[in-house]
Amino acid sequence: MISFNYESDFTLDNEEVYASWIETIVESENKFLGEISYIFCDDEYLHAINMQYLNHDTLTDIISFDYTEGDIISGDIFISVERVQDNANDFNVSFEEELKRVLAHGVLHYCGYKDKTDSEAIVMRTKEEEKIKLFHVEL
Image (cartoon, rainbow, N blue to C red):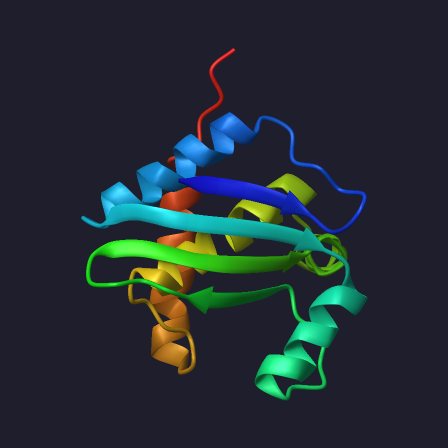
């Protein structure tokens, strides 16, 4: 089950479409969907989590807490909507494109992908792009 929670004014349009896409990402990695909660917040909220749980005094776009057991993907993914918007501007992409990248990024970590080294980051970026291409809105 995928849930979307809001600790800011932001709300995700088409939650069902995003949930279906995220489930497709999990299945495309030969994993099974457990429970994934996305929590959308602002910089201040996520900075407090970063300080409290990771002892990092920095702003970030995403923090994920992985509860995956075996091939059952579960966790809490906190996303700063403010960071996503700033990153979209910095990378010259739309907010929606950057949001999809971050949504996929958290799930990919749960699937076993890392991004601490340069080579790991290259694989992660490639996987993000691959998963973004799976997103479809049927009108």
